[in-house]
Image: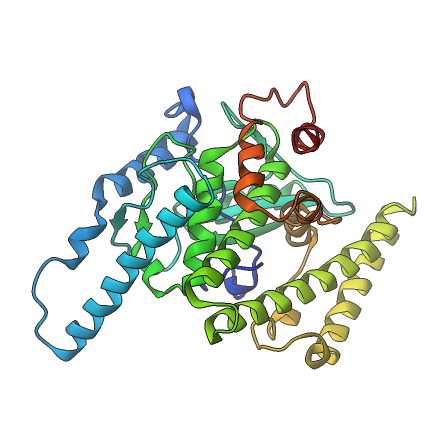
Length: 374
């Protein structure tokens, strides 16, 4: 699923087309929270936001006088009630960790939380990684100031890397702090809110150091399936709200198929053993051809308009690698979920048994399969 993210100025492309990223713990490095200029600046900024957080219920205090204010108050009331309902569903029905996450609210002056930089080799899908204490190596780096993200992009491009910047709407601090909601989230649909909260609470429930891809694929799957179950339980499978969500999911799946077709074609060139200049030339030809094909086949692939602007993006390996990170090629978790009986609460209970797993010693996928087979 692709959660709608806003358009910002750190890169002149529509952020709504970026893959979901609720990057876990990037700005907090455990005992090294304030070690180094980067963590000092990002940590201080995040703590400033947290200090501004107010209890969610306080949004309902005060008097409304104008018709616009009354309408806005009703929107706020529904938002507060929905967040509480999603939290109850996530913790009581799905069994995610009890916490006070998303019980506070921060009034924010923009429509996204942070800009996150990712990078990859130009002639392969080899990720560039950053290392942080506690969480280990990660293939992205977050900045609250978009100008800092631009500087990081320039630094990496000088090294000859493909670079991508995207906006994120939330971070999980992995239990170090109480993660708040932000004012721009009031405009999210019920399924977007459910996906966001469940995704992030999954990170707070289970996070294996040094296993970023496993962590993100798992949270992506649980967030999406949890949101589907929430919408079905609250609106019904025959409701317009549920059908709208399923149509959006179908378009997201179709888009992912296209991305996988493109990455497979590029990967074949990258693995061909051809000279670098030849590889880069073929890469450009393949991407241009793919964008033209995307426009020609749009009506046959998609029901809605969400992906209409994709062909105008300056797609590179860093962009494509994000999909390889967040969406397993073989849909591993979806298949495992099917085999285990499609009981998400039981599936999460099994996942929680991975806590404490030493990533350097064992493969979390193999360990999870063993747990589910018992």
